[in-house]
Length: 400
Image 1 (tube, rainbow, N blue to C red):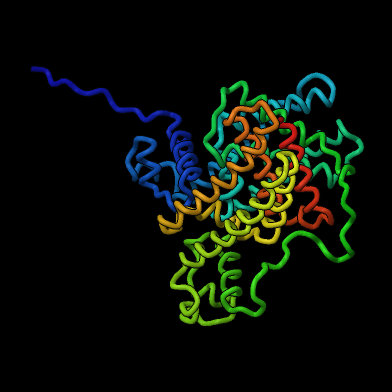
Image 2: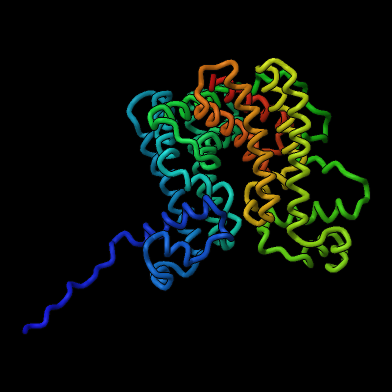
């Protein structure tokens, strides 16, 4: 009998893209350090060794995902701004196009916002340059429509607008697609239309900026110093890359001495999470005694104040949640969801939004604060605290 031969198995031409897409979604859901190469391979339907035919390792995959995502953002921006019509027509086309991209590719905005620190220095530099180029394009488009804007104000609104779209990566809500895109476009339009001149607060005293205030605590407390040092390092390097010795060195004490104050690294992360939760819960209880519209403004004011004073805690809560002990992780997630639910309840009290739509709006407002508080050049603005409050309120009002 003639021997029959099997047809050769051909690898799909887009295998690299499949691996990158699978990795991006896993990184978004679980965080960079919680995902291994074998996890990526399994999600893409290949073996672990097959991944290395396309990438040198996990870090290389992350760099590819982020850089490809930046290229996609750039392409969508260029196409929208080339739309025939007035500058206003082009800006509207841009806001709609990026809304569609955000709904289609949530993982791009998530990784760009939170995981870039895991890249090699060369790749981080590339991301930073491309991000600057993108914001510059957005700022120019804004100034073409609004000549009243200064370059600095246009940059602020550009970052805030991107945060509206990036907010879809922090929740799993999916309203009907058309409604989802229209809602994101409306929220982004509210940001691009916002007037910095509408601020009703006076300028702060010379030399006193509202951002990055010292953490409140016991003066001279070694525990406070260790907590601040650890949270700073976790934010800069990632939890897994920081040792107890690193924390001790930054706080000016020997590594073993830390155990007098914290039983381990995870305990420090837990302490930071509960500190943030306690502050927000206490402020929310006060705000909820007010009418809905006033309550939302009060919530925005307390949230901005807390984030600006505790930005390292917020950054770590978002990026390092998977490193918390399971019991504490569940409790902190419960507290966080209960806090957001109060925002949603107050918003729905004076609007016809569905629960899903209200969640989209609230997360957009919160994400503007979270993102801009992590952008050093924006924190140099003398009235950044008031601006963050008003931008958040503008988004909430647009949601109504």
